[in-house]
Amino acid sequence: MPELPEVETVLRGLRARVLARRVAAVEVRNPLVIHGGSGEFAAGVTGRRIEALERKGKALAIELGPRNHEAGPEDAAGCFLVVRLGMTGQLVVVPSDAALQPHTHVRLVLEDGREEIRFRDTRRFGRLRCCTRDELEGILGRLGPDAPQISEEQFLDAARGRRGSIKGWLLNQQILSGLGNIYADEALFEARIHPLTQPGRLSAEAARRLHRAVKKILKRAVELQGTSFRDYIDIEGRPGNFLPRLRVYQRTGEPCRRCGRPIRRVVVCGRSSHFCPECQRRPRHAASPSPGGWRKRDRIPQGPLA
Image 1 (cartoon, rainbow, N blue to C red):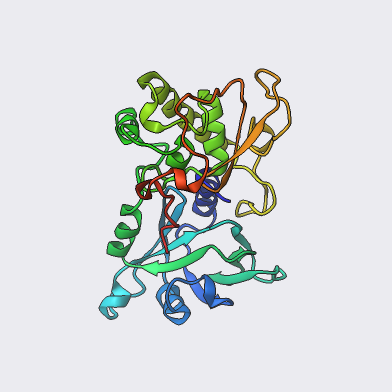
Image 2: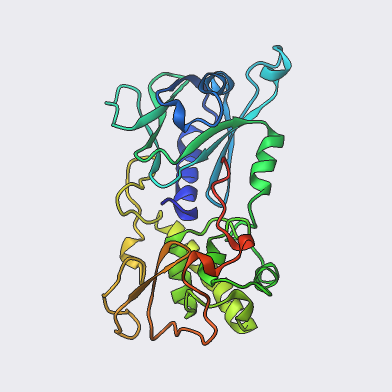
């Protein structure tokens, strides 16, 4: 699933390739990936210039300028195209005459007609939405602080008194936005913290260590354009380069790169969690690995467009 480093890589690629270009035409080939009506979506996006791009957590927002200052209020006001890549979503910029790949659901043809932005999604969990500034603020407002930006004080305050597992806590987008399964596992390994540790039982030193680890892992992954297993590619169609740097994620049974012990796997909150039993010792008061071992307030919310 694309996480913060992958979405940030897509944002940077789009900023370099399509900023200040106008969307001349929109084709919705599969309305199931559109939040709201596909006709309304196409009408809202067509004819607008790409003014800016921003990201919070895994949500990508493309600011679209006014269509015509002399037209009606709907055309004179800007709007936002919000993209959630879901599990297998891809945004690519390709020549307009390039062959359509399977599962291409939306085409945004750029002003000169030579290139277009295409949205592909094999499993169709991703969503696109055209919305106003107020609606965008509501979407992003439901997310917790962006993981690379959260302060140490905010991080420690958010963990204080929390039960359940630290893995589930890291995945909760209302607490900390941007982390998914890959980078949560890698950050916990970096900080030497077992995934079933309870956030509220972390020492201040361990919590600070985890805060630093989250930022370090995300920074390194962004620098290497994210992690690719099967589906994730950047806007040029290239895979990310972080895969060889993974130290625990999907390395079950392989030797730990610190101590040599076999990496183990446990299901936490319905997600596979990978850890080293030597470097990440299970605490005495561990959380339950099952979904029943965490409270409603610790549930992992769905994506911001749901």
